[in-house]
Amino acid sequence: MLFSLILRAENQKQHAHNSMAKFELKLPKMGESVAEATSTNWLKNVGDTIEADEAVLEIATDKVDSEVPSEVDGVLIEQLFNADDVVQVGQTIAIIETSAKTAAASNGAATVSTPETEEQNPQVQEVQKTVETAKATANPVVSNGDRFYSPLVKNIAKEEGISQEELDALPGTGKDGRVTKNDILAYIENRKAQPETPSATIQKQEPESKPSLTQKPKTPVVASGEDEIIEMTRMGKLIAHHMVESVQTSAHVQSFIEADVTKIWNWRKKVKDNFYKREGENLTFTPIFMEAVAKALRDFPMMNISVQGDTIIKKKNINLGMAAALADGNLIVPVIKNADQLNLVGMTKQVNDLANRARLNQLKPDEIQGGTYTVTNVGTFGSIMGTPIINQPQVGILALGAIRKVPAVIETPEGDFIGIRYKMFMSHSYDHRVVNGALGGQFVKAVKDYLEAWDSNREI
Image (tube, rainbow, N blue to C red; front, side, top):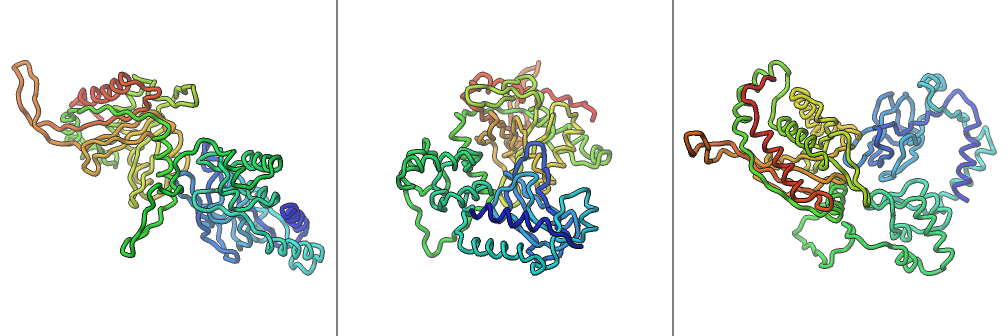
C-alpha cells in the first residue's frame, strides 16, 4: 500500500548518518483544553532559510489565529501538512535541516540524520523513486470548504480507495461534524457488507439532517452582474456554524430589565482619573458590570451550568466570557477565569488586557476556552437592548444596552419627583430546557440590584 511504502522509505532514510541533521518541528501545546489546530497558511516555503523564533506556519483553533515559530536555525525541507489540514498537538508539522551540532543543542528535540546525497545510498534512492511514482499516480483526498480531514482519515481513504466525493458526503460524528476514524471504518464495513452505490449507502447511514451553511438554499440566490460576491472568512464560517447550532440546541427565552446606574456613572466620573494615575489602567463600565454578574452567579449557581444529554453539569468555577467585536466585524469571546475571586482592580486589569490582545489577535487558545457564562455589550454600538444567542455549551448570556440619560420618577420620603437619571436595559437570554422563567428573571434582577446598590463612597 502507498502509506506503508512511504513509511518504509522514511524509516530507511532515518538510518543514514551525516554532518547534517533533520529537526522535527512539532505543533506546540497551546493550552490545557486545546488538543488540535487547523493549519491555515505556510509563512515559509520549502527551501527557505529560517532563523530560531521565526514564524513558520499560521494555525487556527476555533476562533484564535496563532503562529508556530521555529526552535532552530536551518532550512525548511519538508512541509507535512497542507492548508486546512487538522494537526494534533505534538504532531510533527515540518522538517528543518540544520547542522547536527545545532540540532543536538535544541533541548533534546528529535533529530534524524540524512545522507549527503541520494546517490550515496542506492537502496534509499530506489525506494524514493517508487514512492514518487506512487504519489504521482495517486488521487489524494483533501480537505475542502468546511470539511476538515485528519491525516489518519486521509490515509485510510487512500488505502481503501474511497473517493473525494464519497468522503465529502460521509456524515461525521466528531466536533463540528468532522469525520472520525470510527466514522470512516464503519462506512468501509457497511460498504463491504452491502455493495451498493456510494450515495445509497450514505443515505442509509445519515442521521437526522441538520441545516448547514453549505447546503443549497430552498430558494436559490442569483447574483446579477452588478452584485459583489464576497467569500466568507474561516472565522465567519465558524461563527455562523456555532450560531445555527446554538439555536438548534437551546430553547432560547429572553427576560428584560432596566437598571438605574446613576450612582455608578457619578462614582466612576469621580475616581477614574486617580485610578489611571495609580494603576495605569482605564476604568471602564465593563469590569463594574462583570463584577455584578459574577456576584449574581454566585447567588444563583444553577445559571452557571452546562447540559450534557439528560444530565446537568454544575460548574464549580465562575468563568466569565466577554464578547468582543474585532476590526473585521467578527466576534471573539475571551474568558475571565474565576471572576468572582477578583476585586475591581484585578477585574479591570483582566478586562483591559484581554480586550487589547483580542483586537491585536494575540489571544492564546486557552484564553477563549472554559467559559461558564457570557456577557456582551451591545450598547457599544448604540443599541439599547438585544437578544443574544447563547454561547454553547453555556445556558445563559447577558446583553448590556447603552447607558442613556432619561427623565425618571424618583421616590423620596417627601414624595415622588421627576429627575434626570442614567439608565440601561439588560437582556438575559437563557436556555429554557433547564432554566425556567423564574430563575432567568431572578438572576437578571440580582444583577440590577447589585448595580443599583452601588456604594457612592466606595474606595478602589
